[in-house]
Amino acid sequence: MPVSPSVVPSLPRRVARILRTSLFAQVACALVLGIVVGKLWPGFASDLQPLGDGFTRLIKTIISPLVFCVVVVGIAKAGDLKAFGRIGLKALIWFEVASTLALIIGLLAANIVQPGSGMHVDPATLNTAAVDAKTGGGHLPSTTQFIVEALPTSFIGAFAENSLLQVLILACLVGAALLHLGHTKVPQVLPAIEQAQEIIFSIVGFVMRLAPIAVFGAMAVLIGQYGLGVIETYAKLIILCYAAAAFFIALLAVALKMVTGLSLWKFLRYIREEMLLALGTASTESVMPRVMQKLRKAGARDDAVGLVLPTGYSFNLDGASLYLSIGTLFIAQAVGVDLSLSQQITVVLVLMLTSKGMAGIPGSAFLALSATASSLGAIPAGAVALLLGVDRIMDSMRVVTNLLGNCVAVFAVSRWEGALDTERAKKVLDREIVPTDEDDDESRGEPDASKTPKAPAVSAADDKDDQLAAVPAQAKEPAPEVS
Image (cartoon, rainbow, N blue to C red; front, side, top):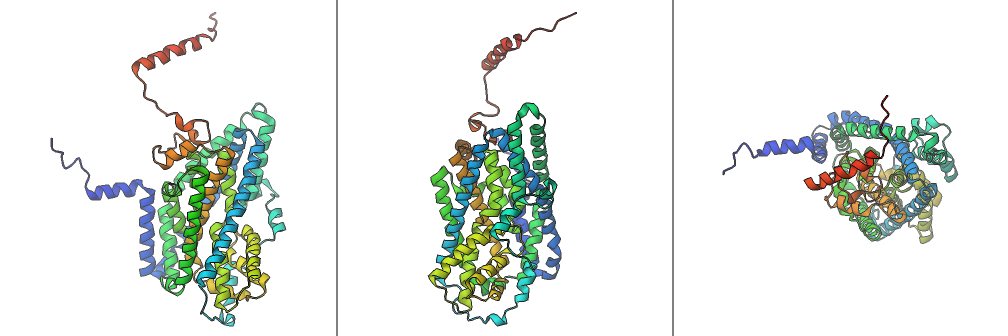
């Protein structure tokens, strides 16, 4: 029987349906449109800055309460504060190893390729005032100051200032208190926090509908302000940074496969919408709530996701570490300074410390580079102005590497601590299971969650047997007395 032409949707209808239902398609189209608008109408594009900034502000309002709820619920449900401490310790070890490896790879790549050689730049000709404007006169905290500032001075202040480390500490204290008091003394607190968590995730869904608009505005501003010519000027440096990042990501893929048996490329396909949004807005914070949700649905337990991912945003900046090490050698080569092996080792040691206090500080990369140059004494601090024109182009590399590095850390640490449902993770990444909001409860580390279908098909006879089997259980309850 021939199929009626009206049954098969036309191409425009199929495209319209994809654009209506797929966030990935919407963000991709917004990305392309933003590039076109920024190239053709740069003056108009600069007025679109509030689109990206407004979206980022909305997301930031959600992050702190979401992290608090996920961590508290994770600790309370895991029922073991020692296990939570082990997760934190293993995460810090992973972060230090990964970020140090990124620094070393960056130094090796810059020594081999020599991206700044032959430029012969006179530091006196550089506009150092532009660096001050970029950093807003700020400074990176010392190690002691960083640790002290991680401790909250006010319960409400930690949320008001959006300080993730302070919120994490408060969440750990509340979770520990819930474990100490037990559910009998405070039976309503944990359910209330769980319900608040569900509300926050619903808000995330509402805000994410604005993602294409944010990507359009952010990309238009980028192209309008910097144009495409900067890529030609700094082509060697840009290619080197992206190639080094690709090599580092390949190492992450190998590590993830060895530790968990999972494929990083399949995971990248799983979070493609979030990755494209992070690229468009040049911010990993804009996708943090959604990535947390997807990691939980992929079988990582709440306490592992809630602790490792937010901590990684402050301690595990792999992409920034790559960029800082390459950038330091680039400016040294550009101004004609030949750094010895001992000086390059000093670069690694200094960046290991300064990179830990970078998160959330405007122009933090330039502050870290300036601090490194000052510690060496051989590179003029003003030489970091050489990277002003290319810094925004490097955001894409930093965002992708930072995000994937933190997600791999969640899976690896979860696997070591037994907080990962590996079978469910493989099925989710292989698309055998399509997680939905309805089955979110199954993905929070519950045993055998992936092995029990939500709606198993049963025969009529089996269903009748189940109903009969339920009768004795109900009959055990005493019948109410009738007066």
